[in-house]
Amino acid sequence: MNPPTSLKDLERSLYRSSTQDGLIDIQVGSVLLVFAIAPLLSARLGDFWSSAIFLPFWAAVFYAARVFRRSQLQPRIGQIKFGPYRIKRLKNLTSFILVFNLAAFGLGLLAFFGLLEFPGWLPLSILLPAGFCLVGYTLESSRFYLYAIISALTPITGEYLFRNHGFSHHGYPIAFGVLSGTILAWGIILSIRVIRKYPLEDNGGRE
Amino acid sequence: MPEKNTHMEEIDLIIHAPARLKIMMILYVVESLDYVFLKNQTDLSWGNLATHLGKLENAGYVTIEKGYQGKKPHSLIQLTPQGRTAFKAYKNKFQQLLGDLPE
Image (cartoon, rainbow over all chains, first blue to last red; front, side):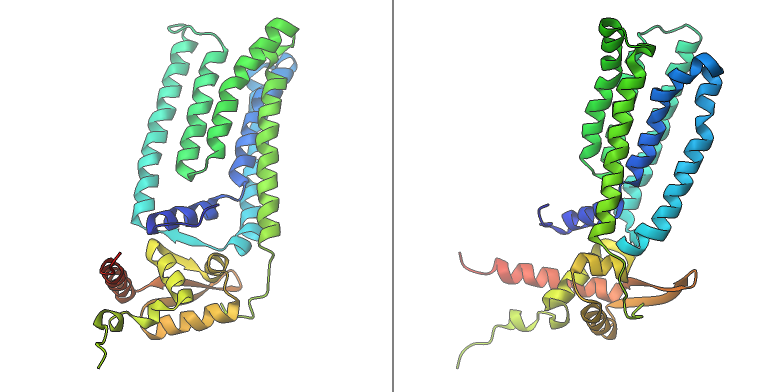
């Protein structure tokens, strides 16, 4: 990474170093697992329960991530509070995320009531990359733009596997399995890198 | 008798030391941070960091708010308004000084 060349760059680099612990990747990857596993469970559990059983799993992952951040990552990375520029930027983004979610919900409702028709892979091919771009912009992290590209191709790949190679469930288990597995693996690698780069050390009681 | 460079004399030497300049730059762009974060960013040893922060604290440029997080001691370091003003003045003075240099 190049050293910062201005105070603005320095602020950005500090922000990035405080958010690149890989936990967001692990959380996002575990959320996307639902698209890989739920179709396989739907025949036995039905559409609703095959997705709903993921709620306790997500709760466990998010709780474990929180505990891991507090007990392992924060003592290594340290803590930082950002100034008004960053807070304003994050507030603007929160409003944008709200609008984005409402739009996605609205589209979902229209599709549910049959007022809007589109191929099954299309909404995910738009919404997932848009979400990843938003996260990439928020965290100022380029790997989320890469995830956006991969996630745009994932439903299309699944559909291709389904139509041309007879994969079940529109190819989602394999396509989303690869996507969520890649993101989860990258998150775990980042977390391990942080732990190795910043070992816990004795500060000689200086705090 | 050689002429004195008055611009150079006006440079704040408390900030001018490379380690303290780095600390001041980091503190200037954030609200507050702790020792661990600052140590990771500056690559200073615990001892050096404490010494430089002590000098900045004595000059009234930073405050170190000592507290606890659970049972562990945890201090937050922040630039004071005086420190912010001093850093701005240092930045302007240095820009002026280097800007005046012939090509």
